[in-house]
Length: 492
Image (cartoon, rainbow, N blue to C red; front, side, top):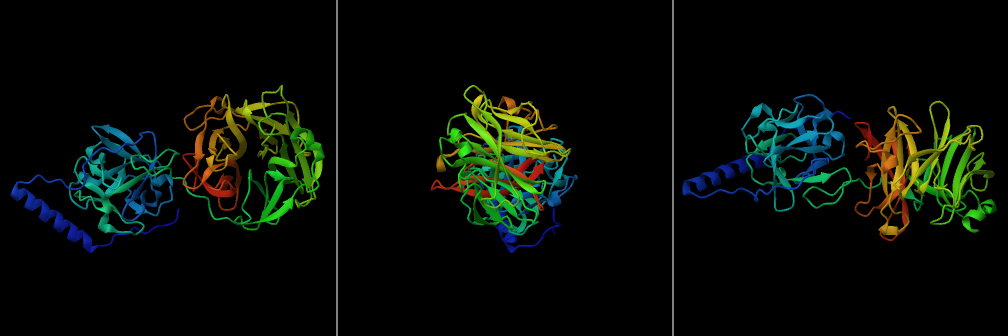
């Protein structure tokens, strides 16, 4: 994480606000009035099992552990929202409507330093002692945001001096219901916002330009450092890019058709969900031939010296399925392990995701082993992609409905295993063969049904590539980067 300067600057509005608050309070007490500062303190609803980013209403920045520290006493500040684990918080129930705010990154909780009751007292993180200076009540404000009132002092968490700077410290101050004391709770694990009604918090796709209409994208790096993308469509459409941002149509792998696939497609040239790979001085292309809703399907292989349109040579069928099988031979993904072994995962609906071994010399099937990796009892699961990182194998899949335009409910799920052949489990420990999966990306805003993902390591980060649907029903290329919090991937 980049070095950051902790901002501590004076703002004249603090003095005005403090004097005004003192004046109003004194006047009210002298007159015998009942003082009610701010909105009624109703308890906002939060999910104790969810993680939230807290966004300040005044600055638009997120509650953040300074420098992503894990140390007791590290400052709590605001910073431009990035959804890092140091900006994610869980509400631990302390009883009577109070909660402790636990950092996902450090495991420590928000704490008013020194158990102070003074205005302007510093707010830090500290080991969870359960003290009242670590407990906060959520009070609703009129605009759907919340204020966080400390149980020990009765004061509200705020951005000090109304700052809009990265690194501005978080303090406590008398509850004035100011915008710098209001926080929007944004749930970051795929659910709805907690008590704020704002929808999910997934980031939009990163910038892509050029020819970005695509379905079921798959990509490989070229020897020159560029990118070659294959996707679903007539003859397997191809795209190229030199920078992963601007994409250019590059024809199709099979402009002359694929008559060997006709028995599976009913004569259509529309081929599905390719997998493309560069190895042994050539390109490999595995692709699916099937008809919608049937499991009379096959995965074929072709090779090319350059990857260019029209240069692909048919190398035969790798695996097939038929009406008597409990799996569907579509959506291939090929993973090369650190020991040099090649594995193909595939599958859609039926009994779920399967895996076979490939011969690294030919790209064809090797042996008869067939592993079961994931399933939903016949429900919607498809598009496997396996990626290795930090000693684990991560199995990404797509759940729910593809191919319905803006009504698609596709979403990206993941599990992990210490072995390439499984068993894979989700974050809660549920086996993926029993329907388990931890959500990584789902519909949000104008991004509908993101899925049929692939994951690959690039020079800057691990990359998640997928398609999504616009309101028009057209599908487009989506690209986000991945980070790993506590060993689990999240998009940014």
